[in-house]
Image (cartoon, rainbow, N blue to C red; front, top):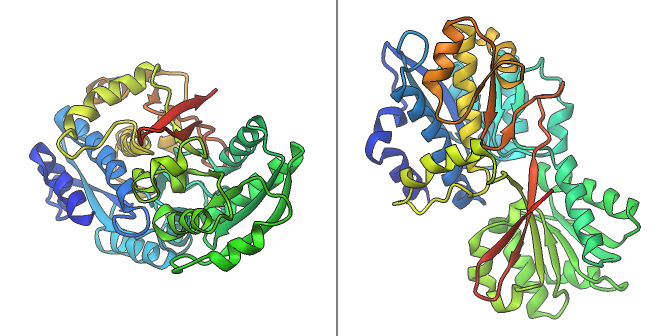
Length: 407
């Protein structure tokens, strides 16, 4: 997967923005991502979204006085320790202006608490969703364009109730993201009248979870609420459940949304038996359509879809960093967060994906701007959070996901 991602970053015209070595007229922005790790397949299209935004900036006049925006990539591996290492590389070695990322909540928490907040460097994650991020003492330096799982957990609980579930067992991986969304889901499901018949935290990367699942399968549970990354424990838990007749129905959050779930388990076993929520965009929104029209052709060869999870968020996060630099009028790290808030919210001239030249001209003319992104508006609250949209994904008999936007 790392080879695939590197190939995408070096393809065609992307070569001009993918390097990590900076020259005199380069403005370096960090890109921390789980390039390797349990969701590497999901991360590659997200990083591609970041690269596309960078390309649009450079093709339409560049930053400030025509400087080139360069993304410096660091592998945070979806791991807190690796997140700290990635942050140190970007902040202290590459001397980046700001950071897009990290991908996962644990890596993000590790990176921002140990490195970026103390250094006064702003970060915008495109896919870290743990509620704990909202609670950081961050000096207004930590933002995200993906909604907190305080929203996703509630959405999944309502879906469960709407589907007729009244009793569910629950298992969640021992990490920031999965534990966070599980906590929200459990409370919301109970508030809606549901019962959690049993709940267990599990460690990732085990060969088997049969004993844990056997314990959970009693007490009248109608299905299993599963909070895990597909590549670390999720697929194994589903397989163990089905092979041993312990659970046949599953609900999951977006850490489980990947085609490999269908490929490894089989559509016959999953069709009609699993619901997976994920952060989503409204494909009827003209900002999303502008983004998709550019993303699709750019990454057709790699097989990346503009609707890939968090790919649109990756675009918005990188574009917003560029807008913040332009609005600040300099690469002063200390000016980034205030400038970001100014460009992300109205009132002002509406800027959509791909409209860098328009944004640059408006800022130069002293106008206020309001970025309406591929994932919708990015009006940050006091915690640096946005509300966002979610979809539900169900496996069909032909081995694909059927996606429905939750409105």
